[in-house]
Length: 434
Image (cartoon, rainbow, N blue to C red; front, top):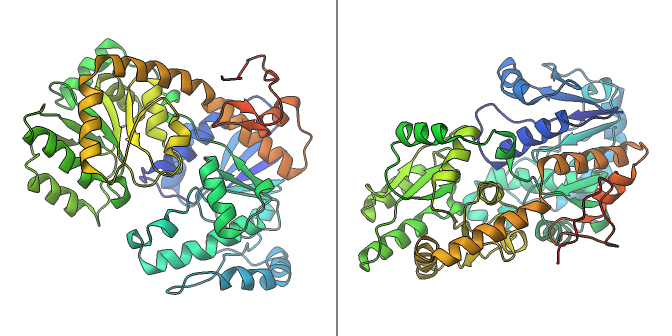
């Protein structure tokens, strides 16, 4: 069986979706099996970026420019346009409403199924797997320009309608997709991404000392790894840090990683100045996974005040390295975290401030959260995620399923149980959490 993966993502993009794609390719490359994987790239730069994550059964294919029209496009246009017209009718006003249609390139590669893992979608004459990831634009439209809103409300409904399987990271997002786009719940598969830093080696004591020196880390600090998008809620976190300090509480330090999203970055800088946090808040920018694992080891806790998450990779990463977690009680986070984190209302600065004090000062709470997090992490694993995607590919492409495939497709990731029974996994492991 040959699987085509079309990430359509640019080198240097460091948000969660880019990291999830890298991790998926890396996980698939470690699996044994008869599958072959073709990964489409749009430039030599993208080829160099993705090549280190690939295994022996994976190869990169350069997308031709300009695309050549072919029989597949003519066939799809005739069959799909009436349905596309109905899908587009639900799209928001304010921008183009065109769903890209294959020019024949995808079909020419001789693959059995195509996966669009990054929200982009191209209508093909192949069985399709699609990741909408989240519907944040419908809950926080003010964070999106009109043309991007219109694009999402064209591409997302089309992808969810035409794909054989829609993959999302949590039951919460699945329910949202069903409600918003009237998608058949039976075609939506929940597969969380797990911790991308799992693929990086564990840091040694020497590595940690190097990181302290390289990043000038002095004293205890809380960690917040996130691109500076508005919904990540940096500004309320800054206000909470100032409130703790000004109430004669501890002066807490915060280290932030992740790309600086240019449209919102000036407000981040202004917030730091407004609350006098120049000596308390550090932004390190993007750091490689090996260094990020070290930061998780050195930090006192993970604080994650996001207003919207479909599934949080930093929380998985924190659990991997034994870091206690304090995070928002919104969207998919309570489902993901359960009892393995200190939850707070991200719109309440007082609640954030209280959580900051507790996760830094309460020794018993920190120990309990650390233990609960590492126990919770047992339900999430990079290779299990890759195997689940492989099972989705096999099913969509009409290949026979193994017992392990059927087990994974029926696994309730968030509750740690089988959806129909409590049998052991085919690999012999018992995952029947209480």
